[in-house]
Length: 262
Image (tube, rainbow, N blue to C red):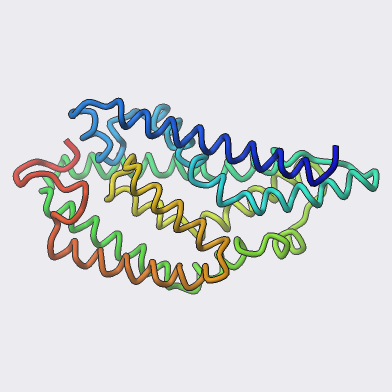
């Protein structure tokens, strides 16, 4: 099978899997009744750890497969060249497995943090207005990170697949896993606060997820991606500041008197 045709197959599979994940997320949200819809705005979505992690991984597949596609295809191109020379060939899906492992570990951390925050909020009786303002502060932190040197460093690694391949190549199956882990860590460093910002916006808020996905995709693939990252940082700072003044501007805000994360 020609290498170019193989690339098309891998790209089609990545897009199809991501599309299926998006359809599942939209279908799940549309099928919720009013009480269940309130749960998507709780930090843990009212779920126990196994279900939360399953939903988290579906979210990561939906949001990250499109943005990781250039790196995965570049990895496959190099591996196809090695196979053409009679060297050991490693499937791109081994690389993908290492990449997704990073996001799986992040899901465990996210659930632990969300569950702990919900317990603390319930214990101290945090008002929804104060909770929204904390969310606004978190959005401002995410915006500040978009403007930081660490964001620039991680984004540069994600924007240049061939550069990552040249500097981080490892042979063999475990080498592919290690490369997936390493790229996943750079991707995490690039995007983690954008995903953390989903918590005050609603972790299962499909519209917010779509905006974050498009933003990450633009940052990584468009020629002006670095400038887009800076502009989004300014926008997050302004929106977070607005939420501090007007907590009702946050989608997760509930009526006065309600307690956070019912």
